[in-house]
Image (tube, rainbow, N blue to C red):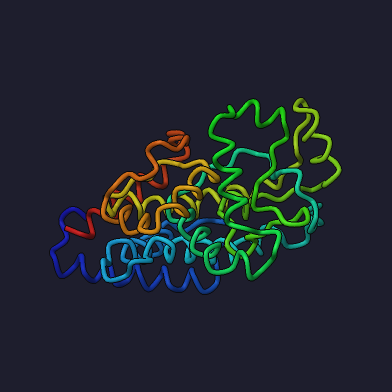
Length: 272
């Protein structure tokens, strides 16, 4: 690909985007095709670099989440998962997500929180986010600190929940309940859905990094606080400002970055 002419690169880019559109329509199969992943990454990359779209980051997250939803059907077919509405035992977990996902949730909260439920209030979410600033992660686990987006023991932002939440399924709610109070026990998670979530996350983060933006993982609630308090947060982040630098987070492990790094390389080659 390094030796392709400009015309050939443009054609390769168009072909990849077409494959990406098809993948968005039907989802990713059990065997992940890297050319499909590249096509989706190119589509997300275009959203992120288009300065005429002030909500481009949230739009990229929405596309990635829609892809994951369509892709999970294959992995869940025939399984009797234990997850049900009202089962929230995994909602005390530390959730690390990307900036585009934060903006998607924050935008939805501004538009829907009060209207959707009197129990889902921006003020309460912000109050809990500030309270957490002085609590270590280990202490949160010990206190069983639950996600402030819960309403009646169910996800209040279910429509826009992050990839990390969408990809987690358990075979037994009872086992998850036990694991919440006994950290020596493990939740019987559905591994294929978590792997699919990791692939979609890699695609989204490749687009983010390829656009010259920070792909560092950000703690969910802390990130939501910044995005809600700073009305221009998304525009500033898209302009290259690291507005989440004070929020705890994590870099991806090298083994989790392999697909992401390959896609970044392809994105850069096709952009030359």
